[in-house]
Image 1 (cartoon, one colour):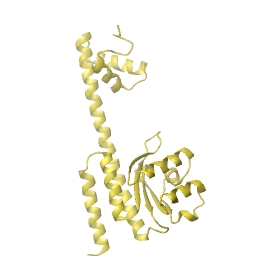
Image 2 (spheres, helix red, strand yellow):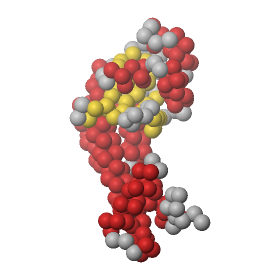
Image 3 (spheres, helix red, strand yellow):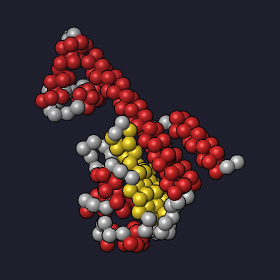
Image 4 (cartoon, one colour):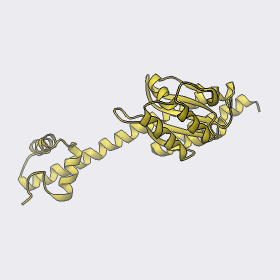
Length: 232
C-alpha cells in the first residue's frame, strides 16, 4: 500500500474517531495523539482561544509546554502568540537561528528539547478558534509531506473542535433552561405568580446583581432565597 493510501486511511479513521468521541477534552486529546504518530513530532498540543480570554492549553503531550506557553502569554510575545495574532501558519525550521523572538524564550524552548516547530491556526468560517502546535527534536524535523499532513490534520481538528464546542454550548443552554424553569416553578408556587411574572422576577434579580440568569436560578433552587430578599 502506498504512503498516500496509508495516510488517507489514517485520516478516515481519525474522522470517524473524532465523530465518536464525546466532549472537547477527548476531541483534542485524540488530535494530539494522532499528531504524534502521523507527523512524527516529539511534542504536540492544542491551545484553544475563547473570545475575550487568554489562550488555554487544552491538551498536550508534555506538561512543560504549558509552562512555555505561560511564559509567552506573560511576555506578550512568542511563536504561539504570533500564530494567534497573524491567524496564519507559522513554520520554524531551526530555533537555533531564530531571531523573531527573545533569545531567552528560544533558549527555553531549546532547553526543553524543541529545535523546530509548526503552529497551525484551527480556523472555521474565517475565525481561528485555536492553534495546533507540533514540535520537532531536531532542526528541519518536518518534511514537506509532514507539513502537508499537519495542514490536513489542522482542518480535521478545526471542524471537530468547533462541533464539540457547539455541542457543549447547546448542552449548557439546555441545562440553563431547565434551571430557569425549575426556579420559575418554585416562584410560581411560593408567591402565586404566573409564568411571565416569575421569569421577570428572575430577570430583574439577574440584572440588579449583575449575574447570569442561570446562576440566579441555581442559587434560588439551592437556597430558596433571592439575592437581597428572604434573608431574614
